[in-house]
Image (cartoon, each protein chain N blue to C red):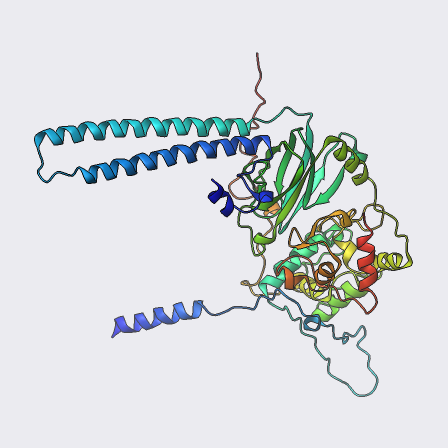
Length: 179
Length: 320
């Protein structure tokens, strides 16, 4: 009886591990990541209180999109001002402080519209689905995504260089001297 | 021989039709192996049929002794032949690995998912330039190519000119090409490198020395200034859309480094690293829906308004 339970348990584990975690989309249709213009810059609204219409990032908690966002973060030179999230000329992105809001729609607006004091507007320069990938990555910087979706650490930010090569431990080879 | 050549494909991408000094060595080695293997096979077959024909029913002590002698002689011949082939192989490998001294033409080829970036080095910095998916080399001059990978392992292989050489991230390699006759040769990534590995080709143009000098002068120039109103409109479309964030056009503000340099785009044979010929219809399809042609590639689809695509194509076709 116990053996049968064990077998069933093992079978369930095997079956569950093959569950699809997420969908990896290679071909973005223009409408798939169309922007809904709903973000508010102020809390004041006319008339009675209306609840916020929340915009969901189509790539929320999607590991592939987050890793794509990480690549784009370098490619579009976000690292130039924000470094790898630690901040520099621009504010850090991996802390709890969000000047213009931490919701996906706020981050989207910040990238597309730009913000005063230096953040350029990327309107028309970055396709919208890539902006959403960047949003997913920026949110992951402050640990707001499940562990199974978050990126690994950068190779170049390890204490040692990439796996299997530790040039700082191997003495420089001297050029051969001919008599 | 013709039978084998027939199956090895056409002459622009074939190790059996060498057009370079190194490929010629590899071709000779192949001939040696083919001839010796064919002779050995024939001899073995003849010996087998003789043995079958002269088969005796009874085993005699005399026969056993003769069999021992025959097997010993055959083993000795086999060892000598294999050793000779090994020597031939090692000598060829050494000859291919021998690089000409520096001072010859220096290029740097970077493998990317899934295209090739080609940088032409020069002591004078103003004479350096970048190209993509095509290499131009003069005939008869050794060209040293430094190989670099920016993402995963690729392999650089121009069968008509030389053997394969891997591009390993963090570990630069090098290879030398020396064309012996002018022509256009096709190369291909020879190490599986992801989804679009099959669509990662490049062209080598081997040119006479004077043609090469002319080409070099033209390639160092910035792009042509658009001359017609349609081309000027196209340049505006290019600059106001996502294109310049990844692509460079020398002589304009577009300076992105992650995609292929488009300064002399119209002079290329193909688009998307040898995927399609460089003609207007294919180019339009590539700009509007690249993920249909090369799923997973880094080129995003462009949302262009009506009346933007044709001027953009006209502009790109003017980049001679």
